[in-house]
Image 1 (tube, rainbow, N blue to C red):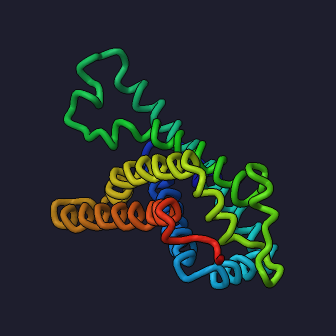
Image 2 (image 1 turned 120 degrees about the vertical axis):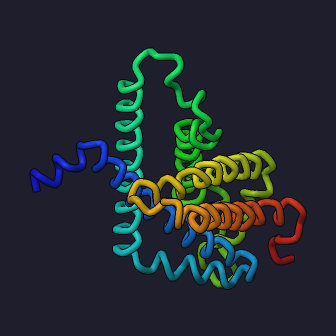
Length: 229
């Protein structure tokens, strides 16, 4: 166990940990998107899906706590690697990532990560905790179930909530565009043979995630998705 902990304190171990936690978070984003897209199937379908999840509180909270641990570990490891890179560069202005042809996505990983974290906190307070717009959280449908459909429609009908969500999705996909490629590079798979395939996978992934997520607030703002009359 001590040897394993010592390994994860090395640069190689930290990069591997970033890759593993990043992949798990990517998996959550995909699963979360699939669940969210059920809003297009109607109020009854989405509310029954949400009710099913809430009917398994032990599983749901184990998942939430596990996800929180992964997020904390991912952030902690990212900070550790960033500090290591900064110490390695020293004060040499020519040894700077902004001068070595790196992409904007790679240079803005820390900034996009912080904004995504702020969005996650807001999103949880809004849709999970009901702290923000508690009247939305208290909504019930005709069957007496928690009206998640109505809560989402009412929430995204507020322009600045939708704007914050869309901006966060832009930054999330900017983060993913570099993070997915870096993930495979950390485990040694992004070589000359697999690089084109991996880059295409990263591109398709973030485009699908971006379009799928922003389709929800845009459809609500345009009135394509609305509460039953």
